[in-house]
Amino acid sequence: MAKDKKEKKTEKKKAGTVVIRDDCLPIGGSMYLLYKGPNPFSIASKLTGSFQPFFRISSAGWGEPDFRWDTSGEPITFFIKWWVKKGLSAYSTMRFNVIVQGDENSQTKQGRFTLEITPSVEHKFPENWFSKGIFWIYHYLFYNKVRQDYIKRCREITGAYRELLKGEFGLLQSEEGKVFGVHKM
Image (cartoon, rainbow, N blue to C red; front, side, top):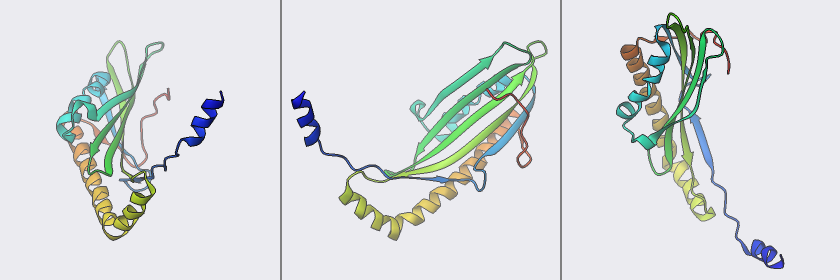
């Protein structure tokens, strides 16, 4: 026991990582698309096929941390959440959180869903204090302009992805703040 305490005292503490997260879209930070028609779950589940070719990422560049399908009532409700990450530099990563929430009638297969896209850019600074100090100077003199360019690029990619989804899957852009009244799961 005494040895464990001694080992803990001699361990050096690492400096924490500084993370700055920039929202790519103005106020609200999300973009909404709506779908109403036949087989909404089938269309929602096909969205993953667009991640790799559009964002030019590998299969490790996206994931599905949450999938819920509730068949206990009518209509059947579903909730799916994905994330997509695209590296921009050694310090910055573009991240898109995509959430689909909707319902489908089990008899007619008619239904609807709301798709929410929340883009952001994350900047992670070096962990050791010496590098961190140099990086702050670098950030002030140069990287802040690069950071603003990344945010602009993120906005452009989000808009292009929205147009792809509208054309390929027949989704409609939501009026400001309007989403379908589906069940929260």
